[in-house]
Image 1 (cartoon, rainbow, N blue to C red):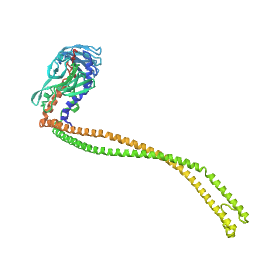
Image 2 (tube, rainbow, N blue to C red; image 1 turned 90 degrees about the vertical axis):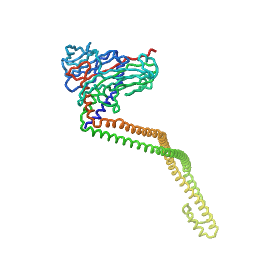
Image 3 (cartoon, helix red, strand yellow; image 1 turned 45 degrees about the vertical axis):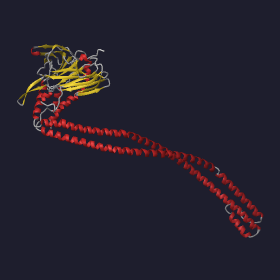
Image 4 (cartoon, rainbow, N blue to C red; image 1 turned 120 degrees about the vertical axis):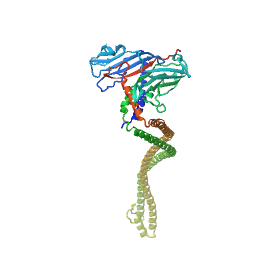
Length: 571
């Protein structure tokens, strides 16, 4: 469903968006020669009408003095031979016509007729025309609040105001609901000025935008002369400016060329994209929907603000938690470092222990072998003594000596041989105990040697793990510390976001009160009159397609470009 009110408002929005492309026009015009450039496909927007007609795109260059008064007018026309005609019937009031891009010739006839021998080509030509312009530009200056001529300003310093006033004199008288009304061609006036930052500072513009590239400030202003009257709108409802005012502090005043573009195509494009200004049957309901939507939008912005306030409170708790986490991470890092140091000491001690046990284990065989040899010597000596005493007994070994000597003692009784066998057995028992203990000792050394090797390997693994833990704990601490250091920025960001949400909420309320509600209140019950005027403006705009003349068999559009002369300091 169509939304006529939104369409009407989009006219203004589209024109404002067009400011984005004005900077390039300003640069291009400042770089141009004194005479206007020949028309090219860049100078005029090539748009196929879709009607099967040839098309004329016209650019009117106005070379003006610093106060906006006209010095010279040059008109450039681009006739697009859409149909590829051999001959094109044109209409023009230009004098001094010159083909600026080809060698095609023309023949002039009565009633400003001009027939081009096109041979299927587009025609690019220019000429002069001394007629009153449909819209004029007047530039005035003040210095510290006092009017000043541009030549008087050169080289002066102070607070400067440059004002561009636009007068629209192109209108038709149209019958609207039985009343004759003046409907002006809806020219959008876009003025661009380049200000040297060495000369100008603290720049502001009444209705437009400013871009500063560091060396120069680009000022682009927008106005709609006559549109307020055409629509019959009170300025308290919707203010469509008819001037642009630039204010700045100047040091040694000097002003480069200014450029102003006037075109009614913006209005036509906006109306076409919106689908025209019809569809009034549901307009009241659409305004109600717009009002409801604004209410929902404002409620949403309020909830956004409340949510961001809650987020800010939670962010403070988060910062406190990050502080505790940082302290814990610091303790973990210290503990991991201590563990790493202890593991290093353990690794060193276990390695030394393993080396000592290796040295002891290497003596095990010699110790047990020597002890066994001594045992055999003692047994042999005992065998000899028994034989000398006349005792018949089996040869003693480490395994049977105790049993054999017990038998000798039992059979000899209290005889000297029994007492000698008892002493002999006690000595062998004592040595056997030593021998068995020695074997246990060497076995223990061997086991300790193996355990020390395992301990050394475990200590090395523990050291590696402790080092990794220490490194990881350090990384964790550094990360948490970074997070802690970033916490103030988080708080600041959430605070800015909350403040921005408040500004958004306030802005929506102001827009609703000053814009939507005023629009609803102003046209309640009389929206048809506004739509009738919009339709009339669109019709008048579509009929104004040329300044110098155009054939009724052509589509066309026209734009005007003013270039004022510069104001140069004499210093």
